[in-house]
Length: 250
Image (spheres, rainbow, N blue to C red):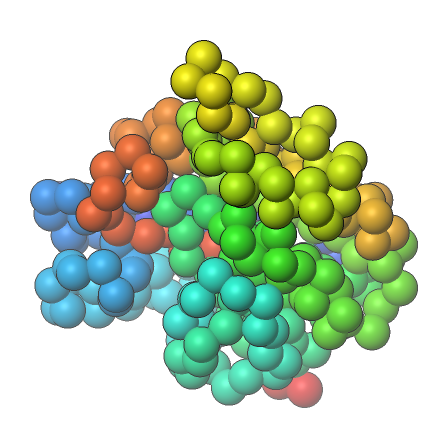
């Protein structure tokens, strides 16, 4: 019996014609540590399983084209208006075209989806702590033509503060960029720090003039039934976080 794909629609006031959300780990054919909807082709899963999972992803969610699958490098490079199906080394993708599925894959890192209020511009960004600290949010916003006040943001599932322990070097990197980032780290009983990716990202958006930020209410680490988590399991699959606009190609 085929299990339908389980996915989380973005809960934000996006304009008509915008489809966005995040897959979970349910609805695919992979097994073992990749069970079951692993969409990452770079994590050691059987190629045939990944291909079938991606086919189901496109078909069941009625995507208008093959997604843009980024080869994420935990950096700040952002591509603009790639062709559907391309795989490019980058951590952000922006498009002004209909039917281009902007996609990032995650298993603890913070997936960020963006859309202008008029729906003309869309983006997906991958924000692990390195990319977030280095400025992937700012790089993605800089690729938008819309005013910052007219951009909507949705955070897909990521690791929560209670489960994301980091060393002092991570905290210091954020504090060196902005001393106010210190409030998003809590010292634990091992003299290390619990980092809040969601709050750190909200702070970056606020500083950039973006106020319409939604989501951020899931924890990948804490829900093994629904989410892959690299921090929890090590070798594991990847979820897809996507946004696109239906319509004639621009």
